Length: 467
Image 1 (spheres, rainbow, N blue to C red):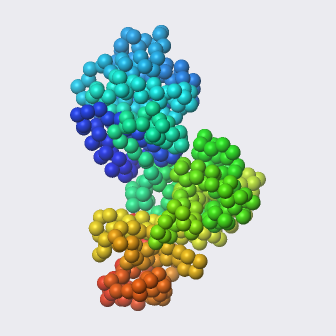
Image 2 (cartoon, rainbow, N blue to C red):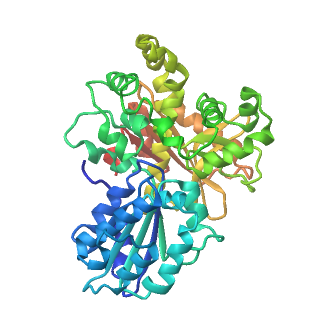
Image 3 (cartoon, rainbow, N blue to C red):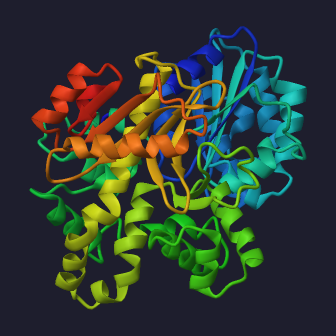
């Protein structure tokens, strides 16, 4: 599969590689996000030792690492007839002579921590005593986010303070998504709503002529890769997976406030905090508050969102009907998906993509006004898809996102103007900007209005051409 994006990550790794001193990089992120592919792209044509840890015993992992070193350097002491210790192997590496910086990669680092709880201390000692003063770049990569944060990044970890940098690898952004599908006529937004920016899912997805046939083939087939993926993805991270699945399903169904989650599951709010915090730490959920809240951490207006498009879709449309799919009642589930796929799922993904684009334009100074923050705003009676604030935290830009079958007409503009008036407490409505994202374009009246008014910005289509 084509290597897409990761421009900033490669640039950062190259910068660390070109340092005259040693480097210690921690690369982490959820499974399937492309950590190994990034590493392999980076180490191409460089002197490197790549070691993929496994769930085997510590002895087997040492044996594998030792064999890799022996096959590369042919040092007699590394012959497999005598099994060395981790400390011995790191010391031998430190004695090697190489013209350019040597890159040592330990991938799936969490498996070494599982087989030996003291491995962080072993690596810390080796780094301090043998490696840090050598022309070496050490990269450790892991998928078990909670373990990596606890055993590598936290203050209590023996490795704390050793790293020279870290990369929390995120899914591919929508603006690069089309690069996976060169010369293919597809609906990018609908497809992105199924896979998000997870390279593995994009790679294995079997595309059909329309989106519903694609869903049927890849999600409603009990033998397909994606049908059981959430179990495989989360079972290694979470205990009591049934409780977590119930919480995610309830949130996917629209119950995103703490009180509603509690009521739906019959669980006390205080008991939910543990589960919700774990899901946030694993980058599965995020807690969102209205952008103008002064104290976001303590705000009672916070809602919980599923960050991953794939998991969001799966828990909305697959998990609740899994028993129907397993007995072959595919048409029943397909009808449910067709009735609400756009309204309950794609339209919300379109909002996320629109805000993402606006943030990108703002970062690149391509908006007529500089914004310090961009987000959503809501209360009991009102919701605004996009609100941008200035450095004084005053709202100066308001936006609406419409994924509809018809072009957007001027009534949408006037409604947004009225919404903005309710939000501006000082009643100062001058120097405001209004931005619109419409999947199916705009009426002539709207376009004419936008041409006359300099404070109206419009974007249309799948947005990919805007990047």
